Image (cartoon, rainbow, N blue to C red; front, side):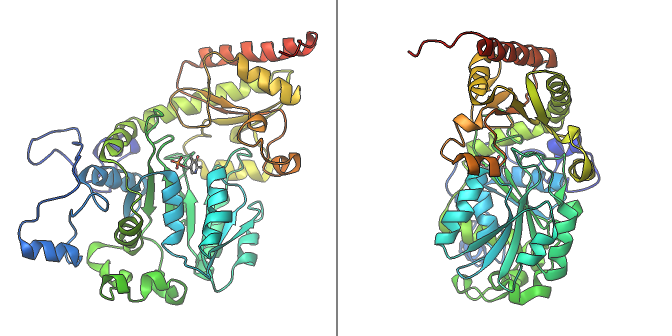
Length: 443
Ligand SMILES: *Cc1c(COP(=O)(O)O)cnc(C)c1O
């Protein structure tokens, strides 16, 4: 089966060409734990190396277990192809390095995952690639920051802590009018948001989060939308449209033609993955496939539970405000409703009136929630950024990123909603009770 009109619930199980293993009949996708693949003969081997035929050579570059995962994710996203990589960080880095080289720039939303922020602000800068950070509340900021060296726009669809949904169509359209593709990190909203339908050219994932869904494997994916006219803007994309010395002068937009509109993902695989080698382990690809098969079911429960939790928090006197797309108003709510077609997701932020100390006490009193720096697990997770992920930032910088002293981030799991809410209620009570009690003696 290939990409077609089937629904998500069916595509997660059947999307792509894998049906059963041709040798064993195995229905579950086998873990192809091999480094290399026997060539049929010398002609076959040289055709593979010359990319005249696509096939398995070495697991740094291709693997049949990845292939099943890649095809399913491409089918779900409505993309032309996908590339599995070792982590979400690799996916973000490759998505940019596949278009930009020293002297070039990208324009990125300021609302980013911390790891992506440092990748862009520091590591890519050391590679000679400049990132121009702009406030996404006004899409025109992207146009204003664009020049002839701009190779991509980059944004997260549902960035935390602010949880303001990115104006996908607005920015993608500006980019298309100028010849700049939008790369969208859809980690927090797989299936819920469909960036390619709104004009994005590339979608990246940390599969570590909802796609894997069980908090057991790090992995990443890059989905090639196959919908961007690289050749119409050939001067902007020399890496795709000019002869590549590393492949006997191949031009990627030409080389991909017999295979489909996959110049972007083909180059990412045979250049970046080949040369840098941030490859996914076949075992992790298998675990991510297991997670993917129940993604629509899990998301339904994540979404429902999060709405129940947001409503519970909204009515608490010790909570000054709740950040959740379904509780927003104005332009942010309009964007949430326009782009989160499959629910509001399962991330919730809230502010404790008691500030930093109440935040710490709340976290320490949780019994069901795990206190971890992660999102997208089937289990409910919580973190107090001011005392952990953001502690090294000045108070002012914390506020700029949306982290206030009493701010708590929740990633709501798929447990029974009443058990989730009971744990939150007892931890809020504990945080508040300690507030009223005389100060404890320092240990
Ligand atoms: C976790 C995360 C990443 C990084 O992914 P890893 O798999 O941890 O490398 C990137 N973007 C977002 C939005 C994330 O949540």
